[in-house]
Length: 227
Ligand SMILES: CC(C)(COP(=O)(O)OP(=O)(O)OC[C@H]1O[C@@H](n2cnc3c(N)ncnc32)[C@H](O)[C@@H]1OP(=O)(O)O)[C@@H](O)C(=O)NCCC(=O)NCCS
Image 1 (cartoon, rainbow, N blue to C red):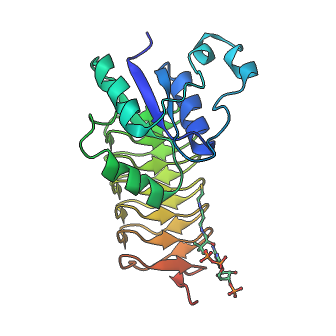
Image 2 (image 1 turned 90 degrees about the vertical axis):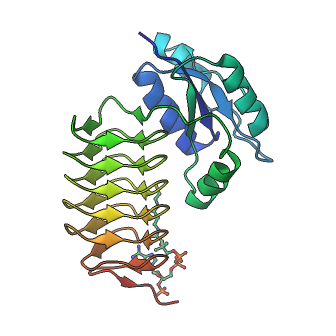
């Protein structure tokens, strides 16, 4: 049975990915919000909307300003309704989270049906887990984090709020990722390491040491990026 509605905050590429996962897992989409100056034209092509009932609910409803979008959400009032960030850029996500501090809570996680999430793992509100991603035993993924396509979050990992584990990145068991950190495409992190708040791990890096907050590390083995 379709669940209560979801508002996607954002209208670009990542919003499309979240919308697709939501539709495939039979979440009902209320619409999406995008107040950028040149918003995406249509989150979902007409051809996909006519492809089956699970796609039909996806409409390019622009909800206008964020405050109006949240008004719609509150007016809807139903249990289980909520929002999820559909924006890739972590700094912009954090800015929107500040604006939404007083808004109703984010919705339950959006998990693509082809993701594998252990029954002993926990996912916070507003989390997105993409197709072929694995979140293994006792892992904890905090609110608004992104576990993107094919990423591996091994047992006992902690992924902080609004962190992004990019497509194909892999973390060994017991790794801790700080809030607002980005683990780039295809990066690897050996077991039990700690990656600080706001760290950027470059695409393809292999991290073999703890990384202090705010650092950018690249390469194999990963080292602080020299500018
Ligand atoms: C690490 C990163 C943040 C650096 O970005 P940047 O500061 O704009 O860096 P630049 O492109 O100016 O490159 C600076 C130098 O670092 C090198 N570099 C950049 N990214 C690198 C990487 N991932 N691994 C190794 N070296 C890298 C460049 O070759 C360049 O070297 P040079 O000065 O010898 O020519 C970025 O390249 C990256 O890997 N981001 C991850 C993106 C990602 O996975 N996003 C997820 C989307 S779903």
